[in-house]
Image 1 (tube, one colour):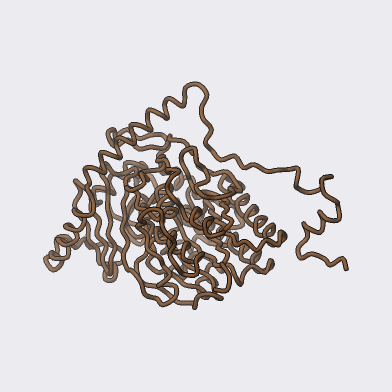
Image 2 (cartoon, rainbow, N blue to C red):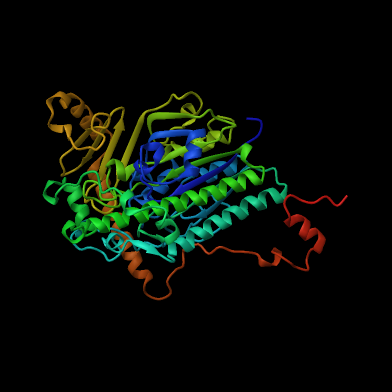
Length: 507
């Protein structure tokens, strides 16, 4: 690469890969993503490592598995001394900025980003912690089924307010970059909260679909047929199929598809900004989700499990000037993005990492369609009372959690994960090998102890912070208004010239 490429990393929240047309979906309308997939590198088996918002994002940013950095749940603090891709890129000469959601908890709300262009949509405190020692008592902040029962068209939501702001500031950042004549490369992360529930979307997106187009889940399991973890999830979000009609499910899915089309439109705006600004040739665009959404498949909703709709995410790299379009079938994960970004910034060479990283670079997949075919997962959030682990390798996915029966699926012959192979004698040797590997890889009891201690610490701190003056950790974007628009600290002609793009010659 003749010069360091810019990186535009776009994220969507809770976007299930199977609904997208380039992964076989039949309903969602995403012309901009479809174009990126046609001319880019598509990862057909990309996964998040921990299917919950904050842990997934901490892992993505750090290249570390959750248990190594304490990324247990949606109220776990992201330690400030854990290097992120933003730190590594800054060390490589990049400007780094974040517009949108990253769900950092704790007083550090930057984690390597020089700028955050917006606040976050989720709280930065310790309030959303689960309590493994009191599982039956549901906190009020847990998911419930109102997102489904109240699904439908709307005029406005806080998520629309947020994402409109996210994309506006991202576009302005790109315009400011070209207007500044700054040769320093940038890494801009644009992270939207759609299509995350609640399933509500304006009429213009609702009307892109019709009820007759909206399919019901491909199959559902009765409560008594669910595995133990899924039964706990039904308790967590108070799922009762008898209280939910087929029409409400269609409404939820229709609004979800509408939200995907909204995301696609925002991506179109960003791509158009790159093209109009002359940035597209040397900007590598990466698109990914943080986790998926079950959307009623198997009778489950939202995320928090290692089934495909929950943990498999879209991922593609759109850079026709750098990489030949192709598809990658190997299993990879969002944890692999840190070493990939670091090598993109260093002409394909790995930097001197400050600590061993668990992620593995995707550069071999991008350049020669070779590379690793493995995903390791750890989940310690709501719905479990002991750590749940996942190994995805080749055709198989293995899931284990102390106290629960193991699960083993062949995703080639059984993509819907209907047939647990743990009782199949033909797979006994493979099962034993995976069990042995898991036992060597993880000390479940030690991780459980660490999780419970962390929950107790945060429970006490969260309660104490409610008394007296509460600390404000939520990011407050600072804008220097004295340098914006019309001001007397710069000559008017110079100001107008700097703000206009392309500039008009005065010669």
